[in-house]
Image 1 (cartoon, rainbow, N blue to C red):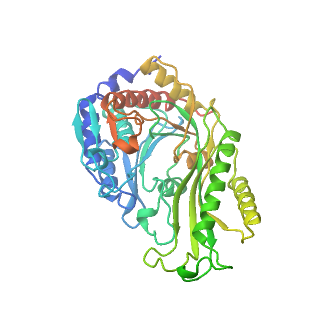
Image 2 (tube, rainbow, N blue to C red; image 1 turned 90 degrees about the vertical axis):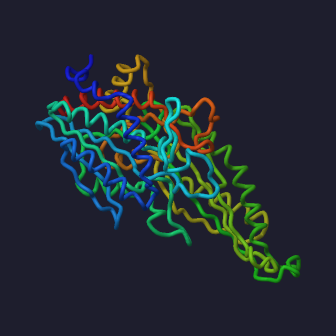
Length: 421
């Protein structure tokens, strides 16, 4: 049964405010490292709705934006959350199309623009739902909070790539929850195609480095010369042979983790007259709940030892520069049950829990004892856009946003009316 105040608040949730809110958000550029204006916008909306707000500075010019609608006390406290940074900056010369630009375009029920899918649409839906509760002056026992965080996008500083624009992978969320923004549970509005997620794959970024001999290319085939690029090629082949078995062994909730050869670097492009004396292979290894980084490290070390033994060359070096653990919470957690019930109430369809494949900040909430359900309107592709959002550019159906906002409303009214166990 819907909460007694659901219909009263729901009248504030319709397509126009959702469309307007998301288009305003998309039109604010907020690449990783440049989220300040977006944070100011979000804090202003929350403050005008009557919430107690703060701009929580994570680093210079990069604040999280948070607001709380206090309850009467004694109830379950809920946090809606999502990241403000976008997957790209909007000025990349290798990306073309309106879905890659921070300029919102509305056409035939869909909004195109950078961040529309990941994940300003989820933030917009949560914001409109919280504003609806505040507008109606609905009094609940538990607090309702909303936080937009910086630095979630899968980026990490390495080598010459340093600074705030590479500071992602949970930077803002870890700061949020260790600096006073608390809740009994959280709803993360990441793209899930309107599915309830209680699990998320993790990710490891590994760098494998091989060394060669310094020599003139004209003498590169003389005995004793070792070409680092050729060594890395052999290692790459070994990784590709290892990957299918790794994926098969670690199936979880019907999904298998991937291994991606993501980058290769070696030699001197400006001086090909020198034998490559160093080369590196960079791989993205997805993990499932129950795995640890060192289990993966041991498998990769064994692979590198085998390559070295077969060739008689030194073992290549291995280092990890991202370890974003997989996460899982019991599907019986109240926040998961509330989201499943709200989804069924609004859509009439059941919502069996799923595991998400891309990284998400749910891992940090769960590790800090804030059970986190992930549910968002993003993830659906336009019928004319093909299969892959990252190829077509970001876009979102306003109809799906309407569903998500109503589900958020129903879940918030339910959760914050409960008494903690």
